[in-house]
Length: 455
Image 1: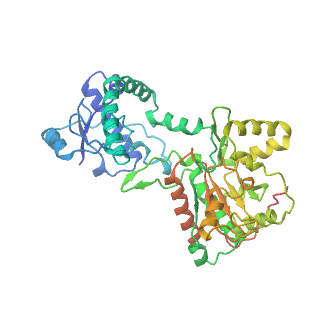
Image 2: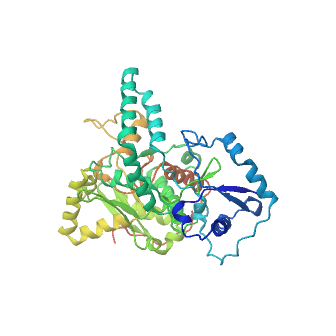
Image 3: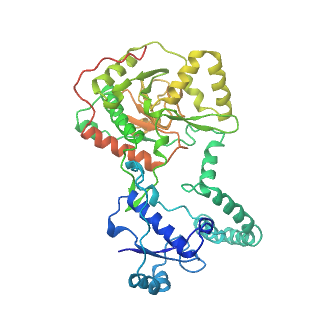
């Protein structure tokens, strides 16, 4: 069975009256966490020893890139760990049965907390990267400045970082606030500057006989709704990379959310009753429609989605391209958004519908950017990427975490506001869409009552 070396956090260890009590508490927590992660008995740590010295570069137990130095660790702890197998240890008292952990969070308790690197580690990595980018003379000058920083300012800054880390929540770290501020305080637009975008291959759709804008848009909408419900109901299987579980905290920010512009600082909004949200917003050029599926959102039907999208495409009246305002400087957009919502109650209702929508679907009337004669600029992929990155800005809403774009010829693209999450979640979404379209669990044939997006 597994045994472990545990270095307790000094703050957490203060409450223990003795090392024996601390050890018992740690074993109890290990048992609880292992049970929540559905580990088998032989996978669960049964005994552990305590040490007070963290693994680090200074004591030669970690590499500068924070990897374990296994030979040194073996030398240091081998005898103590072997003794654990030769001694009896009391099992921790049985814990009160905890409520079952939703599937999406079953690995969260086992995730390691992001460590706070020492100034020396940070500067060593900085120099390793810098050396590849500058000439020898500049690198030597940089090294001298790094040495000066380590002598004069590093320790003061490190103490400030330590204070931030001590106040961070157990599932957070010193880095979280800086990451959030990097996005929320930025005043330049997310459009082009920050939002990731991409183009789906045609292979899957062609192989399934799914062709044309309407057909592909309907299938991708159904597949995305199925994925969104897995996330919202916390049923999604957790991400694992090379055998290591990954954090799932970004997924709940993907659907029913939006980035709200503010003067000097933005914020993230999430629909208060996310499990009750049953609508998406469809943009057809500059027109946008709240398409509400009601209870059928939980058992979505392809015919019903197609009927709704047909109605959106059939509406030829053109309205003001309000979405273009999301491309502006964040302070300017914040003031314009507030002005819009105060001008008319319908404006406020419309923007609220976009904010709360599970996601946005854009149905374009073109395939990309054209020259003054109406000819596409660039090859097929370049034209599709134009639609994905920016398209005609008045036909988009660049504050949504999940924005699907289907061009007139049926090319499927995406554009995502970036502050809520990263590429791992977007790749997972793409992977799940492929699986869902290949083997649909949404209803393909059953005719449902039509949805009227004009209602």
